[in-house]
Length: 537
Image (tube, rainbow, N blue to C red):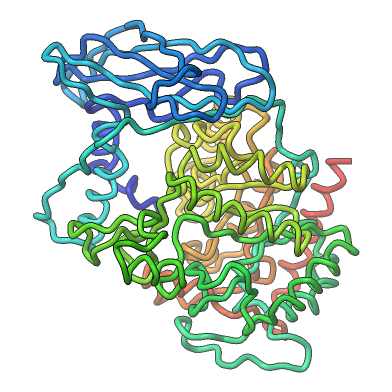
C-alpha cells in the first residue's frame, strides 16, 4: 500500500480507527438513504459502547434553519430506539446500535439536528464524542514521526452538542461527468508557454516555470489526445510551487499568468469541447493569508474563532497535518463557512469553470459540503464537485448526496497492486471492481487514476515497464467511472528510480515536449481514449 493512505497504512492504524469509531457515542453522519429524496423519511443511526452505559438517546431537529440546540418552537425531539446489540472483538466490548427516523421533507429543505445520549448516572454525551478523527490523526502523526511516540492523546472537550445536517433534493451528478476523461495538470511543471524556457528542472522543491499560458498553448495537444476535461492544480496566489496554501482567493497567481491567463485557458478549452476543473482548497490556507494574520494577532479579532488556537497543538493552532504554514479553517463556524463558499461561487461566476476537485474534502467535513453543494448548483447547475478523501469506502459513502463523488483511492490501490506492485492477480482485481461498483451504486462518481502529484508515479514502481503501464491503462479505461490521466503518463514521463518515497515532490517532474516523449505510448493512449469515447456514444 502506498504512503498516500496515511492513517490506514498499517494494521495498527486501521485498528485504531475501528475502535475510535465505536467509542463513546458515534453518529458519523450515517443516515439512510444516504441522499434523501423529497417526501421520504430518513433513518439516522448511533453506535454506543458499554462504557459508559447509555440508557437512552434522543435527537432534536429543525427544518427552518434554526439551531435545534436552542430549543425554540420549531425544534422537534425524537427518541432513539435500541435496534440491536453486538459483540465487537476488535473493540473487545459490546456495541449498541440505535436508530430513529425523521419524517420526509419537501425539496430544498435543510434538516439540522443534534444527538445526545444519556447514561445511567445522568451524564450527557453528545455525538460524536470522543472525536474519532482526532484520535486517528494523532496515531498517524506518531506513525509518521510528526510527533513523539509517547505523545499522549487527550480528546478535545465537548462543550456543546455538535450539529449535523442533510439537504433534501433531487440533485444528481451532472450528466457530462459520466463521460469525462480527465487530464490532471500540475501547473508549475506542465509547460512555460510558447517561446519561454523552464526556469530550472533539477530542484523539484523550487519553481520550474510552468504557467497557465503554457496550458493555453497546449490545448491543441490535449484535444488531440482526446481528453475532454482538465483538472488544474491550485491557481490562486500562493508562495509555493503546489499552491495548496492560498494567500488570496480573489487573485490568480501572477507567476502563473494571473486572471487573464485563466480566462484564456477556460475560453480556449470550451471552444474545443473541454471542461475545466479548478483545485479548490477549503480545509486550510496560508499562514500569510490576511484573515489568519488578523486572527493570530488578536484574541478579539472577528476571525479568531475561524481557527482553533490551543497550546496542545504543536504550533499553537490547528494545522493541516501539523504543517505550520497551513492553518486549518474551522468551517463549522457559519461565518467561515459562508466566506469559503463565497470564494468558490466567485470562481464559477468570474471564470466560468465547470467545477472543482476539492482538496482534503474530509477536513472541511460533511456539514460543509451539505451546505456548499446547493449554493454552487444554484450558480451553475452542471458544476461538478469531486472530493479528495483518502479513506475507506464506508467513509466515502457518507458524502453521497453531499458531493458528486470522490477520487477513487481504493481503485488506485487495486490497480497499482495488480499491475505495478504485482501482488494481486486480475481475478482478484475483477472481484474487487464488481464489489466496489455494487457498494457505491451509479449516482456517486468515482474517478480512477494510476498516479497523482502526491505519490510515486506508476511507471516508477513498475520499474519503467511500459507493458505493465499499458495493461493498467487499458484496465482503467474500461472501468465505468471517469479515468484521470496524470500529466506526462501518456508519454512515459519518469521520475529517477532512486527517489522512491523520498518526498512528495519527486513525481512532479517537468513535462517533456521533445524527442524524449515515448510516441508509441502516446499513440496507445490516444487509441484507448478514442475507444472509450466511442463506447460512450
